[in-house]
Amino acid sequence: MINYSNRSFIGFMSLTQDIAMDLGTANTIIICNDKIVVDEPSVVALDRHTNKMIAVGKKAKMMYEKTHPDIITSRPLKDGVIADFNACEQMMRGMIKMMHAGKHLFTPSLRMVIGVPSGSTEVELRAVRDSAEHSGGRDVYLLFEPMAAAIGIGLDVTAPEGNMVVDIGGGTTEIAVISLGGLVSNTSIRVAGDDLTFDIQEYMSRQHNVKVSERMAERIKINVGSALTNLDNPPSDYVVHGPNRITSLPMEIPVCYQEVAHCIDKSVAKIETAVLNALEHTPPEIYADIVKNGIWLTGGGAMLRGLDKRLSEKIKIKFHIADDPLHSVAKGTGIALKNVHNYTFLMR
Image 1: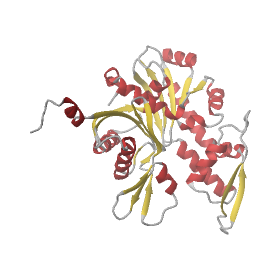
Image 2: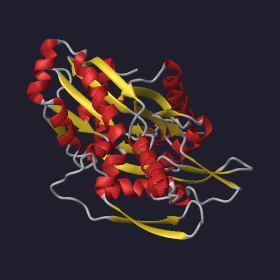
Image 3: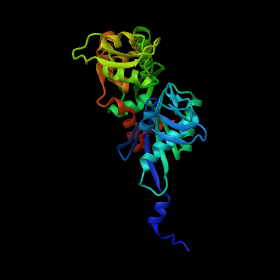
Image 4: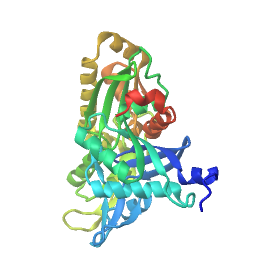
């Protein structure tokens, strides 16, 4: 006979864990107990025949663009939303297992807060919720990424004061005006880090006649990416190795930041235009607050050299880069999870 008076046993059996997740196009971040426990690329490797997961995160990214026909490497999210439902579910399961490795005899049921793009449709939100539930989520809350970013930066989103946040991720750029705990206006454009990477790939092919992979283009962006052709502290040229498009002979091309600034200019200009359009539709009183407070940049795209200066000069409002732009959304979802009763009205 089981002794039901054993409270510790019952507590063990009814184990529930709270986690916050930033399910991003480029990276997925999980926070548990106020700590970042998983920070991995949003990539999963699957066996083509059995559809079983082989690797997830950094290990899967090492395989990306290097696989043989029996292995599929997938980035399940495209433009901020789930493009491959099965791969996304497997990726989420794999990352949650990373978090629990060696800590539990079984995976506990989860209460989750997940950051999602503000431009998501009901179908896209349902897909995220379903993936989370199939991955062990019991209670799943969805929080729009600009709101999560604002909370993560430390802004008082419930105050009667206007703030603007521009969150430049891998698949989408989220532009939101926030006041009194709500989104006064929000714009989600599908121009972000992945588009800058594609611009660099295309430029290298057209200008230097060299084939570069998506991963190589991303390394170019990280090492010499710039929004301006004139920087105070310019980075050293980055040497690119790749095959000639016509002869397939090896090439070695030094790339400077001015070249990159030139080739990504059109995509950066689209972000500028989207910010101006958002300001155009902002009520005058809130506009005055934004001019006074400045505009906050978050997400991986905020780390592009000279972007804050370029936007400040173009829009005539001061742009601030968050202290930890890559983790602002994740931190915001973590704070919302910790104070879920205070932020329920913000969640879906």
